[in-house]
Image 1 (tube, rainbow, N blue to C red):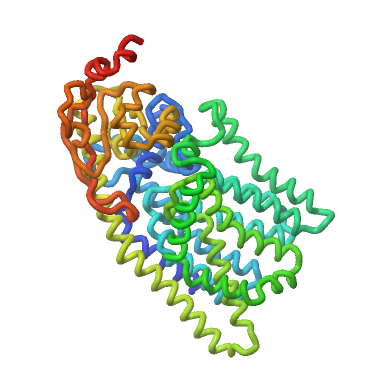
Image 2 (image 1 turned 45 degrees about the horizontal axis):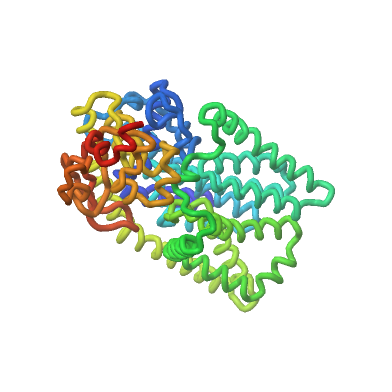
Length: 520
């Protein structure tokens, strides 16, 4: 088993190679926070202005911790042609957590009492998972979220099935929640599972231990967040969420989530649904209490996560669902184990069927990775450097330090420019979050809705059309078009050409058009 598992780990790492040059604009947001930490400018995106604009504070802290010993990690690169030191640090962490996720999933399978070959099978499913592969070395926190979710499920299994202390599960859930805040839902599920699945005399103690393991690390961060930012949840809770309980947005979130899952996990999901439909409930009833509670938790976790996104109106992308991936894969292998255990299934047929099951999943993942994901990632990474990265370098050379820019996609620009930004979506400028959510990005720039928050000297607009804000010659139009850079895609879900247009802003012209503001 150890050799097979080692081979699966190697396979997982080899599959990352097509994404070696891949970074997203959100990756640079993490790098910017880490860079300012290394410079002594606080937990801040704009130097010296602390803000809870990082969805994953733990990921930022890991990048900064490694950056202490890596030369040049706190510097601003002079060119966009080479990979920044912080990006290599992020990719190193990503590869490590990807390998650990594969290994830990096999460990969890063995804890559940599965045969070694099925433990390796579960690890293989994770190794070839196309979305885990796409995001593993993208510079994002996704591989840490994947590993934390696997480790949390493993610790919960140990508590529910073996009677191990539940504080470990609480600690791993805290790690997951400090990586992706929606993993707080896993704490709720874990507490419920321990309450219904533990021995009667130990239930309260187990739940208390889970809470203690969770509160110590997570509470420490909350105390820091409150003292530094005067808030307990990241700005992204408002910046990336739509309207709560909006039926239309909720339906879109569910639709997109289902599409993402079926594109990458159709085989295990289909198998799990069939086994559940044909005797799955009876099998659950036949399990001992702790094991039954564990599998109920595993089944509910992906569903609850998707429903949370639907309720908050979040636009679902593949990396948001990665924390639930281990649960889906476990359900798939567990369902295969049920099928293979039938008396009518011969051992050689079961072995061949397992190979076919794994091959179908691998083909499914390979098709997405090599035909869709990797080409899109390469194209996006080049376009990001040549557009926002180069605009950032222009700002660094052509504007004085401290010049304020209004920007929609803030990461690469801020990292390469070292200029403060007014974030038009509100991630690091909280005053913009409700405005952008209410009226939409286009109205924010067309109507200059950001004026109430700040008066930047420049605007970097994102649109399908170049220089769209000066297409009409109005004498009081405050925008003065300077230049534009193009990018071929903004990700798999947003293909086609886009432009980042740079404008200077004439506030005297704006005040002539809006005298009520000029008189303030």
